[in-house]
Length: 539
Image (tube, rainbow, N blue to C red; front, side, top):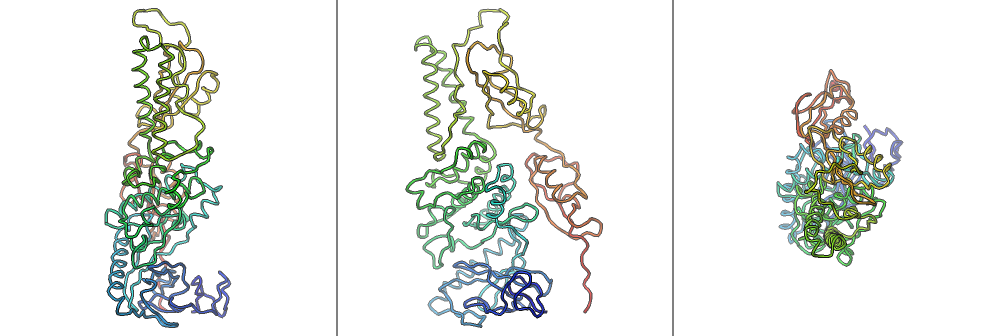
């Protein structure tokens, strides 16, 4: 069998591969393994895929399974020698101790990754062994689309509804890694890939020695995604560092551009996001990303639960609204002593402006043209109705409760004096379906005594908190994933052989069954058929 060293397909007598165009007449340069090197008696090594200061990855062919695999070789540049056509590394005496320590860290790191096999965003590790005076890791190989290409195909950016289910499993995987005492520290668009089934896989794994300055390794950092502390010699890196990288990558996904490099942002920390981008994103997502990209560590989001929470709901906007309302009420009570309604409106405006400045200073600088609280306190004094039982026959505030948000917007547009705002914090409701207005402020039916524009804030229902798992058996994996996502579940997929279910269709749930009730946002794993297992025939 003659294999192409570029793609591991059979090429017969061809020198240039008919499939990938690779020129098999050339040799692989030192210090990389020669083409055709056999490792562990089963892995035929091909061309180098990528390299960093700690390791290099090769495409390979597994003779035992007949599959293409990825071989990651511990190859700390500057600490070894390997001559042309050699496979064994030679380490000088003065480098031996540090070489052994770094190799031990490398093996321990990937053993932990191998144990976290239940997280869909992490690569699968099939084997770890030592040979040629170094260490090797065998990774799974999949048909993957580079994340940068995926974003480019999606009109240069992703909508939040698309990005959210992609990134949440990544956050969970990183959280699991940090609980085991290790991190990735190089999350960036160049180390993210999308599977054929629309799930993200993280690549570019390396120990912390490779992801900061001041270690014996030549560090590999990704401009725009590496946190400021990673450029400092031997600065301890942790989950706060990781959150910077994932926030920068999410920024890229939603805008199509990376933030400025950490060095540049230390001089000017502003994040530039176009007004059109800000308008199409939920405000709490913009704020969460800005909080994750704070240059100063003490101002940055500190843990993954907080990141998840801020990406899911806006506590800040609610807090500002409550503070403005509270302050306005205080001044309304004392308006007779302080110049009437005019001073009330001015005081509310000052509080709103002050709080807005505070939050924009915390969240980073964004150019937003519309203030969602503008006009919230327009109109005259509220009438004191405590001393009268007169029936109101004038105008009342329109009622949007029970409408979908789209219907409410259309109704507000038909009413010339109503400006409708959507509360960024949604709530579960057994009474109102998902996407339906469950409450509003001020209430519908209340007296409308003021002339001019009135601002109404509506709260949207998230639907029932507990959801029933639908039947997905025999559905295509895409249809099943879409159905579950529409029902509010986060979906992972695992694959196994089946004699009964057609390849690419769902066998069932891994831990649950159709009809089980789970909380909205729960992660469920579906088992997808790989078809019938090929029978090994004796040769």
